[in-house]
Structures are given as C-alpha cells and as structure tokens.
Amino acid sequence: MWKIIWAIITIAFTFVGLDCSGKVMKVTEAWSRATPAGATTAEVYLTIQNRLDTADTLLTLTSYVAEDISLAETSNVNGVNESQPLATLTIPAGKDITLKPNRTVIVLKKLKQPLKAGDKFPLTLTFEKGGQVLEDVKVEPASTLSYPK
Image 1 (tube, rainbow, N blue to C red):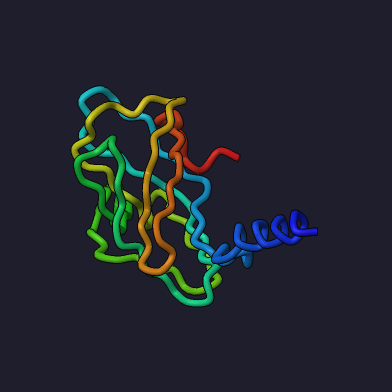
Image 2 (image 1 turned 45 degrees about the horizontal axis):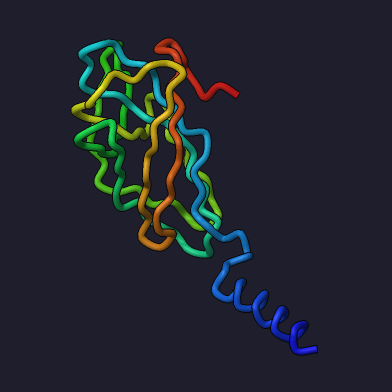
C-alpha cells in the first residue's frame, strides 16, 4: 500500500510547476541563406508564436556564428536595399509574427564563418516573459526566397 502511495506522490511532484497549458513562446521555420566566402553579414527569418496570455518582448539574440546580432526593418526601395535598426520586437498575446525578407529580420553581423547550404546553427532568443527559446536555423541555398516547406 505504501509503495502505491509513494509512487503517486513521486509522480505528482514530477509535474509540480510544469506548465501543461501549452502557453509558451515558440519559434518555428527558422532559416537563413548561404553566404559567399568573405561575407560579413547574413539575415535570419523565422516565425515567433506567442501562446502566452500577454504580449511579450524579444530582448536578446545570441549565436556562435556572429559577433553581433540585431533586429532590423528591411525594404527594397527602387531597387535599393534599405535597413533600419529595430530596438525591440513585441509579439502580441496569442499572435504569430513572421520575420521574412524585405520586412523585419534578424541580422547576423561580423560572421565568424560562411553559412553553407545544408548546415544548421543554433540561435537563442530571450523573451521578457517567455524566457529563452533555442532554435536551429537551417541554411538554405543563396537563391531561396521563402521558407521551404
């Protein structure tokens, strides 16, 4: 009898503090383009899903492939690529935000190595409320225009 009670208590304590609601920050479809040798910058595109009951703000980005990582709003105006730094990115409660070419992007600066098609590298996103999310970024051929499904 005591063994059964002990087993139930052990199982119960295993789940204490575990959020089973599915309310988390989630990152999916992370990709980047291959870069030529000597390239110093690259962009990362992905989707952030906010399943929290409140808006959340992306605070920091880290990866071993670049010395500096930031957010930017990019656009192509009359054939000229323009980029404006973005201080923060807030994801509304229950919404998804997709970072894609000629929109909001993650900019990898001072690359430590070329990004080669077929490779992957880790990217850590830290959110104010949702904590850290680690996602592998797939490197696609340089000609890729959107997330390959």
